[in-house]
Image (cartoon, rainbow, N blue to C red):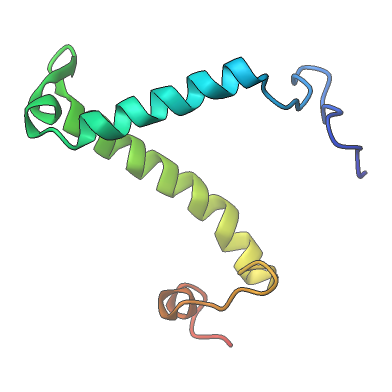
Length: 101
């Protein structure tokens, strides 16, 4: 069933909404702070939690996000719905689906 934008797909999920300008500004500011922190070797070596450096925390986040992106892309490749319309497959995409296309 196709639902209109903003209508939750399940009663337990919050509706999709556009963040307020204040919320968006906070997201952007936090992202800029994170990028600046990532450029400082001293900050990257610093502790981000008990026994964990910021470098380790960021590496874990990158692996986590890549895993979930793969869970989205792989089935779409199988049904020829990836890459999105108007985009070309990169050479590595061809290897991921057994050399098709």
